[in-house]
Length: 158
Image 1 (cartoon, rainbow, N blue to C red):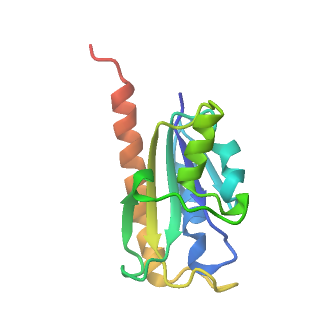
Image 2: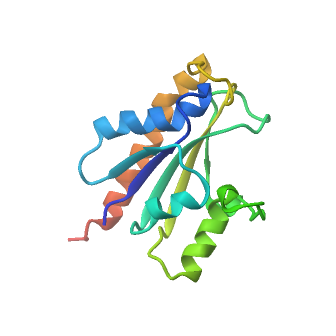
Image 3: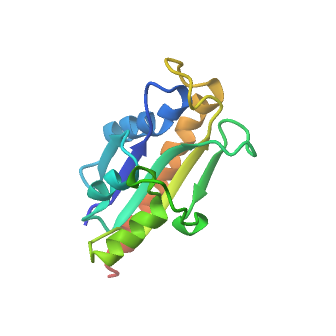
């Protein structure tokens, strides 16, 4: 089964476009063995994208204020706690996993999140800041490394 790589973000909002731009680059470089999607969807709308895959890599911007812009970190769904939102639009990954389980949907069992600390995630019309633009290569490298590892795991031993 193909893994899925999803670049999240909004290409109109400065550094928030990092996931979209990484997905565009990966789509040009990866083989047909991987599906790559770029989207500005969020919340419950992501459920439809993720169903039917067993492995998923999410690329997104993050704004912690604790890291330097351009820092690339890897997260796991267990790093997030469920937060009751005021509507399904605010549904996070823990809630999506729970919903998929309750509905007995085929949902990725293995999820990697590659996030880039951003400086300007809400500035309309701004291009990527220099540190975030410089991080794109590292993001692409990490995604490819996870995909390579997954591919090796699926090769039957001789």
